[in-house]
Length: 160
Image (cartoon, rainbow, N blue to C red; front, side, top):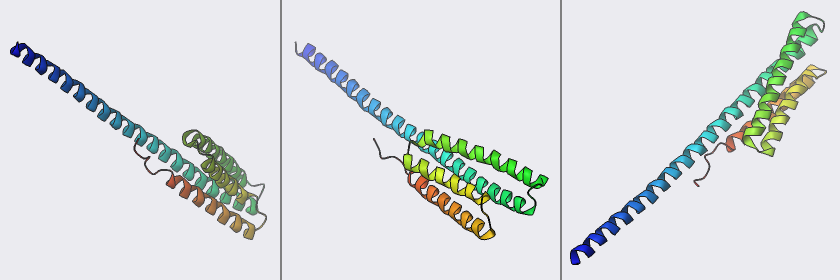
């Protein structure tokens, strides 16, 4: 009888050990999966945030170029080319803004991105060199504000 009781205790102990091992291993796997998912989301946000910033910088450059070509000769092929390039880059920047809204789901960041595009667009509408310089400064400030906000949102999420 003692042998059967000892065997039964050994079997129960083995089963409890197996269950405990399974529970701890499963929890470890869940933690690792959560970390991997958070890191993947962070990388995706980084990519979109950076792509938008690059598009906004390209838009500023295109707005400057369009402004200068229009002042040189508004009927020239150079102006028409600069205008067309501006609209192409403007559309790309808007597309990145929409992608940012989808990935970030952050109203404040979306508004800062929108502001950066609007201020870059103001450059082309400036009436004088002084207005163009002011519009350029405001566009740079708007983009810098977006970059600071986006950077703050890239810190790793706290552990779950």
